Image 1: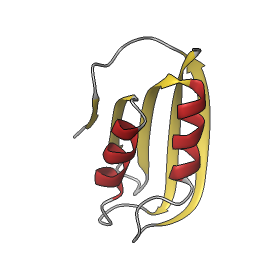
Image 2 (image 1 turned 90 degrees about the vertical axis):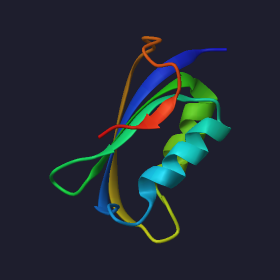
Image 3 (image 1 turned 180 degrees about the horizontal axis):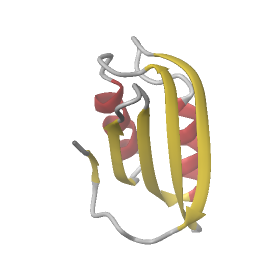
Length: 92
């Protein structure tokens, strides 16, 4: 298993639509660690670590997001695994 880290910046109507809740549920179902948080510019930031194939599945999910979200764009940055997190949470 190859472990990686990914930063996903999600733009569009992604705040106030339960995006973070659904992101936590999806990440946990994929056994990923990291966090999701709202940003001041209205975007959502996600940092996730885990198996590369599962991370790719999670990134694909962020293109759609929660049922009420309207994702306009995502920016994806891959990085080396740091084993920095114990679980996947909402960061405030």
